[in-house]
Length: 124
Image 1 (tube, helix red, strand yellow):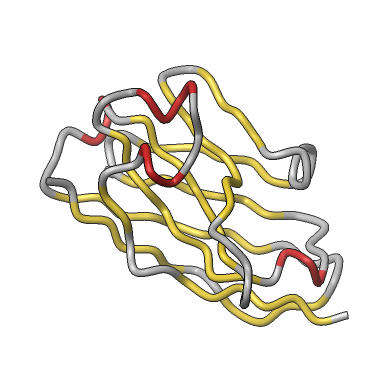
Image 2: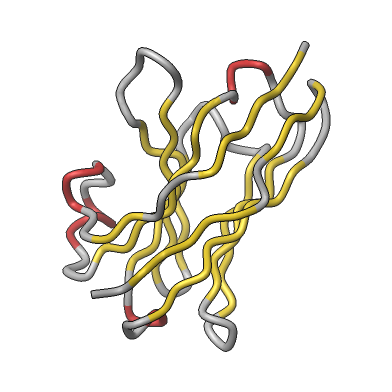
């Protein structure tokens, strides 16, 4: 099983940028579909972005503002967030999908391993 650790969250102002990192260990990082999800207070965990091979997918709410990427040599995935809005405030989780099902159905139940989450707060 792969272990995941997020970092890079913090408190920023609307319009600012932030980069999240997800360090993986204990698995074959380059073979996994990797994803970012987020959960705001009182809301369900939602899909943000996923990455597999050379492809990426984004939620409509972040398309054009967020960029997901990975460095297989470092076993690390990133989420570059720009033009942040207060509604982006949430705990952000990285996740690994070992089966590949998550690429077609990017729902949290299709991802096998999760990090502990990192808080992102965007003030207006």
